Length: 107
Length: 122
Image (cartoon, rainbow over the protein chains, first blue to last red):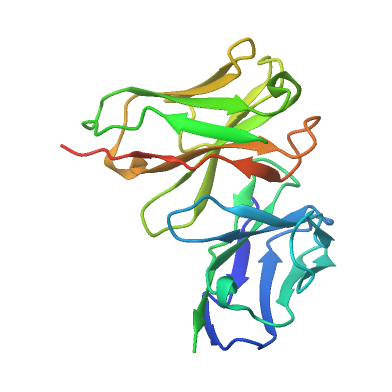
């Protein structure tokens, strides 16, 4: 199975900060990578598909980049509602796998 | 609007069985691949199984292969997960999710249910 290593596992930031989360795949996955946002106690919400395609309704402060094995989720200006968990997921091959998650906390 | 509502989660003893259901509405259910995904308390996400739009093709994670079985009833717009030989480590919130686009399993999950908790404990 393809392993996804997400880093950092947690970070502290403030409203207005620029935040970057990385996801590294154990083998090449082209651009078959998605990013999800999850509030505790709620289901994940798809933010970005195909590494960089922003889903409809997702604020433009979210952006994704990368291809192959290295990917990045960037939040350009952190908002209060963004202090939650983020997961990457590869859908290049089965079993599809998720990264371990990144918790964004308020400094 | 698209809605997925899971049900069936109850406390079960190790070795027991349970069937989860996921009721879909707001979209043409019979056109979409569907999956089950779980999340143990305080942990990350684990994909378990998918089924194609007709029910003919299914795939499972190694962790549940031979114990869990996915099925669907397109007329009832429902997805199911039959779970047998349950273990303590199967304790998790179980989500059903729709594959984006509908035509392939190799897509992210664009809609998720709220989840149903399955505690496995003696």
